[in-house]
Image (cartoon, rainbow, N blue to C red):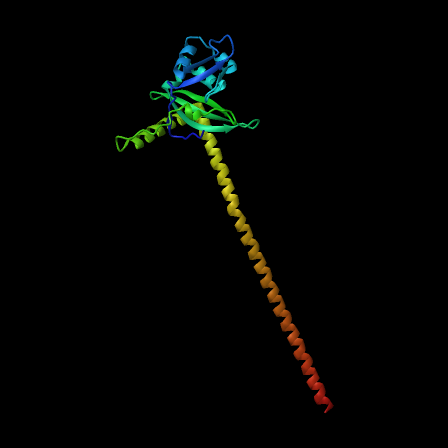
Length: 236
């Protein structure tokens, strides 16, 4: 799934998921909503270790993804938070991605680094996890106010959290690398132009040399012709 910055994502707590689990963890096949699963975790009916190792979310989520939610409980209910995306990392060892979020409840950042892993080829779909509906606007300034609020939240993230400051520093490093590449691209034509100027100067010097040689040859020819004319007059 391609996430966007400056957008608040909301988990859908009432969506049903079909579960399969190993024996000893309740019913082998059942359906529960995320909200019910969160309640089970809070009441210690299911541990986060069991979720990561023994549960398989057949529809759209894996046990590893659900375990990330379990880490937030009971301190914060993931369904009651705004999820704000700030970057994706690609794994170098296997075809998978890690999407990074910070969570906001009220006007306060409650978690600054929550990760959702997505392995390429798995039958998961994170789009089913978040509310993607486009709601009809009633007021003309609603969208701009939402964007302004999101920018305010991101500014808090970059200024007040360690993770946010690290991300800001990474952005500066990327900008410095891009500036260095642009400078290198601009220097190449200058060097090429300089070589053209040098070639032109060398060509001009060659022309001047040939002109001087021609002048000397012409002078020698004139002198020889004068001697020949004097010699013919002397014979006559």
